[in-house]
Length: 202
Image 1 (cartoon, rainbow, N blue to C red):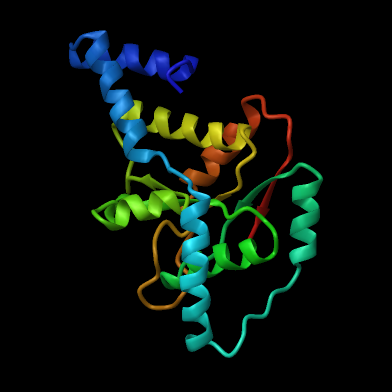
Image 2: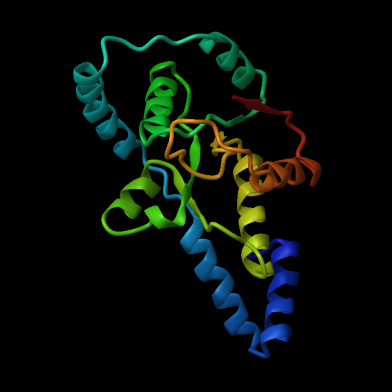
């Protein structure tokens, strides 16, 4: 990511605006990358699959899956898949990843609130594909640039992504008004030169 022109310019702007050395500004960018990035591990996915299978069998009578073949076909045809479910409980992302895994699809990288990045949960979530996002980017050009470029890198490498357009979990069970920031970054990533179509899956 440091080779990105956008990040290189943001590093220069950071050094100039904060009157710090270029090396310090670059270290700030690296620290942000480490704060954000997932550390996807198939070993952790397989372990969690066994745990979740045990859990679902005790919580639910069954799981009904619809239109999985359409999603598989989109993946086969080279589409970048972006899952945008509603967020009513912490079961949402666990269940979606579990179902996709059992449908032969790679579980997505999931945008998670920075409040979930605490020990020991944070490292586990990272290995399950979570990448962390702050509640606001306002006034932090370096952070917004690093995050946007990271999201674009996920797409360019063919990873599917999941985020909640509501911005956070509903505390009442009702749908919340959508937040468009991450969706806007998805479109920017697509327009910056990606050759594969992006499909949003609600």
